[in-house]
Structures are given as C-alpha cells and as structure tokens.
Image (cartoon, rainbow, N blue to C red):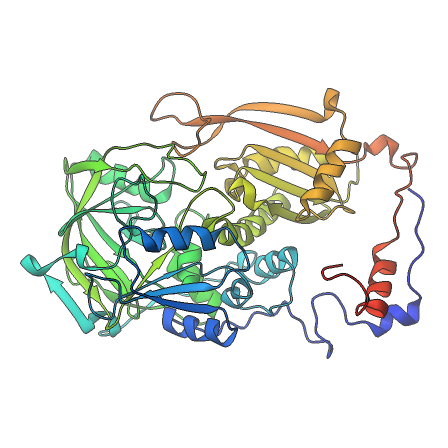
Length: 508
C-alpha cells in the first residue's frame, strides 16, 4: 500500500507518547487504590459514578433495574439499600465495571482506551504473573457477625431474583467459591453461580473443565465431602481473577497479591479451614456431601439464554455464615449481552490470549479484543502485522484453541495492523474487503464448549461446538499490489484532532 502523509517531526515530538500524560508519565503504570470493596466504593464515588437507591424489592425491582443498567457501559454503579425483609443495613452493589470504574478497578488512568487498558493489564500483571502468597491473620471484619447451627439463614440477605424466569434467588453472581484440591493441596478461587435453596442450603453449577469442577469430581470419585467457602462480597480485583483463566495449580490469591504488590490477608474458615479474605463482606462455608443434590436453575446466563435449564446439582450444607456490619452483596448480572459480565471479561481475557499467542511463537501481534456483544467469549479479533505467508491463519488457529481463547469460542477473526480490533465497523470492513471465503475461512469441529452455549452439541458430559476461523488480512502475496486505502494516516489524524478538537464532533 502507498504511504500516507504524516505529521512533521516537530509536531510529533510535541505530543506526549501513547499511554502517557502531558508530563510524559506512563499511564500504563498501575496504581491500585483499594484493598477491599468499601475502599473501592469510595474511589467510585470520587469518580461520581455511584447511585444509591432505597426500598427496592429483591423479588423483582433490583433485578429489573440492574439488568437495564448492565447494558450501558457508561451507566453508574448502583447500590440498593434498605431492601425490605432483609438484614438491617445490608446492601446490593451492581454494575461495578462500567464507566471510568473499569480503569480504576485495574489501577490505570481513566483516559486509556479499551485496547490500551487491556495491554496495560497484560504487560504489568498477566505477563509477569507475579505471585505473592496470602498472609494468614487471626481476625478481621468478616467476623463481626457469625451465624452458626440453627441460626444460619442465608435467605436473610438481599439476594435478588435477577431475572423473572430464574429458578430462585441467586446470592452468588459477583461471588467466588474457594476450594482445595484433595490431591495436590492448592487453593482455587472460581466464579460459579450460587442459588439459595433454603435457609441452610445453597447449590452451585460449574461447567465441565473448570478447575473447581475438576476438584469437585475428585471428591465425588472418592465419596468424600468437599469443603467449600463462598465469598459473596469480595474486592473487585479478587473477583476478576476468580472469573478469569488463571493457570492450573495457581491460586488466585497469589495472583492478586502479585497485582497489589502485597499479600492478600486471609483467615482460616472456622469450619472448613479454607482461606477466606479477612475483609470480605459475606462468606458462607460448609460441605458438599456425597449424594446431596438439589434441582438448580434455570438461570439467565451471559449468553442471553436459559441454555442450561435446570438439573440436579451438588448442594452446600451451610454450617457457618459470616458477615460484616452493613454487609454489601456484589451482583454481576448475566443477561443478553452486552451485560455486566462482558465488560470485565474482556480486559483480562484479551491480555491472556495475547500472552499465549506470543508464548506459542506467533510474532507481530498488535492487539486482541473480544467483543461484548458476543459475551466477550464467542468472538475474538486479533490484529497482527503479517510477516510471512500463512502467518495470519496460524495466529487464528492458536487463538481459537489456546486456554484463554478456547472456552465457548465461536468466531476468531484476524485483521491487519491498520485495523482497530475494538472497532466493530473496522473489523466488518476488513472481513468484507480483504477476505475471500474460498481459502480464508475455515470451520473447526469439536471445540471446548459448555451447557451455557445454546448451539453446543454432543452428550451431556462432553459439551463441544464448532468454530469459524476468518482470515481478514490482505493476502500476503498481494501486500504490495493491494489497492491504496482512501484515508489519511493515523499520525495526520492525530495532528488534525489536536489542532481542531474544539470544532470536531465528540469522539472524533
């Protein structure tokens, strides 16, 4: 392609570098400003992105308002207070990862774009994967209130019925389950939906292949009770790590410690001995005993469907229920995307896929994005600078099946380095003008899927799907002869934008 006119060297030198402020300081240097959910909430208030509502019911009102807000990336964080019929002072917090809060949550400046935010998180956290073991302490706010024995009543908390057709109240959406591998001893924190059955019983669903499911299967195989602790109000960073594809054998607590640069403070659960955050808001713990199963579901999931229906799933006998004064229950509401889940999935998952592409020896990766409308799982877009014939298809094949990219993947699209992978219009333009389906589209069968995928096939215990690889890059053999693009260079666009920003439309 022919070169486009660029800004002069003087004009280029005058502008701050990408990812830096006017003083030249890097905006990609993380500064995590919270250790628990309450500190995070105060930071969100400073951004002007918290809205409190009182008197809404858990039966319908909270779910309806939360679902509406979750579709808008710019909507505030909602805190529902004084929920009728629940523990005095208890609250529900939803939509934590929208607006400027997403950058604050990950510890970065508020002006970073989606791709820069993901890249900053990748290079600072996911790539190095620094690990600091948790610190065990003797006491913490989580012990301010403790229910045991006949006093246990999980129904007293403001767990909503999130969608009208849900099978019950779900206390676990913005939660994570803590389990320990019975063979290897490592601790996993994983996000799995948790449904209230009655005052002393809760059930949870885990998709096959997930680390928590692997541990549960081990306990069931030996007919042994599995200790479980469910953290229903942790800090957002720990929840994000528990929701993400952290490698097998690595505890999310250690990764969060590495992100913060200091250990997570944990307490041994009084019944299970499992490590729980000392500053968590609500924790229930108990055991999944062999044969103790209850009907779980249905639940409106992140795909936008009730795809998994309802079925018998293992249930937790709740032995201890701990909570702070004025406890905050965190909700992360799945629904028709984009939704609460999709906004936080993307940043981590894209960085993890990028790392795994480089680990597989794929050069020239410029950006990775997974679009919210696809639940931040069904569609991956990879931008690369092609260096040899077959390079783009190689990148697509690896991205579609690496650990971070494989689960519920449906479309993997590779585009050239002049395409912004976060801009869906640019991606579709590349697909329409640079892809010949005769040899640039492939269908692969037998991919890792789940019951939540409405198009998966095969047996109940072997959930798989098909996926499409789309090479939307200019064919390598035609790079020198392909038609010239009818637009100015990015450098010139930046120069004009800086000069005429007051007169140009917002977002130009």
